[in-house]
Image (cartoon, rainbow, N blue to C red; front, top):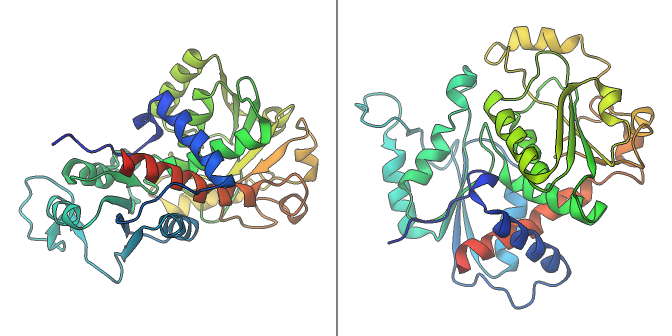
Amino acid sequence: MDAPAHLIRLGNLSQERLQQILELALRLKQDAAGLSLTGHTLGMLFFRGSLRTRASFETAVHQLGGHTVNLTATSDFWELEVREGTVMDGRAPEHIRDAAAVLSRYFDALAIRPAPGGRSWAADRQDAQIRSWADHADVPVINMESVLWHPLQALADLMTLRETLGELPKKRIAIVWVRSPEPASPSVVHSLLHGSLRCGMNVAVAHPPGFELDPEVLSEAHELASASGGELQTGLPLEQAVEGAHVLYARSWHSLETYGNPTLAASHRSRLTEWHVDERLMALGSEARLMHAMPIRRNLEVSDAVLDGPRSSILQQAENRLHTQKALLTTLLRD
């Protein structure tokens, strides 16, 4: 049996396959007739909360005639062991290798949202849980956001950029860190960074000192920029990154320097009050559109005037999760 095609990160998709999925998603948004997942079942396992991912995935499968089974770790099953060769005398009564093997007999694909340990970036960035599922499943495994990557959000973001800007090479996107009392993993930014650079965009990343992205992800990003003809600048001041940008993408993410130390991290963030998006900042762009993966803390990360204004693309972005996931599932399962 051939190994199944997994989607752990955008890098699992060739450039040709990535463009095929985006083109299919754009067509599906207009008319999904002729495509069907009848007889297919997607298993969805959530080890932490979800709103848009669960709703959009379940709707995508149902609209194409398939079926979903949703399992939540806090109510439907138990802790799973990820370490290989360990004596399982701890809390976990089952190993991922066994759960993956069994669920592969029930489902045509598995979509997993793992939970981070939250203590060590060096440990969490290995994405051991999602990789273990991929190693042991006999069906495609789809990453619904790990610590390092969020390929599903990136697909919707790239579709939104295509709809908004047309051809993407040399278009400028500013990825801007914003303050939040509960910042997210940098997974959304990592995947967006790689996706936009693969499309030849010029990317400027603005963040305060101490909020640098993962070094290995950045190293790959520079290689992607060189290969596509795009440009990458990181660590810029807020206004410099936004000036002349066609898209301003706001997102809060953890400082990797204080990762695992919430008290120190909160103290650090509390001093960064100027890191937010308002109409004054948007005006520095080139008729810039606002994007944000959501959820958004209104009037802290982004002002109401921007979120509800004519240049906000957040609802278009969220809707496009539905269409890109239809395209992805159709591609993985019908192949």
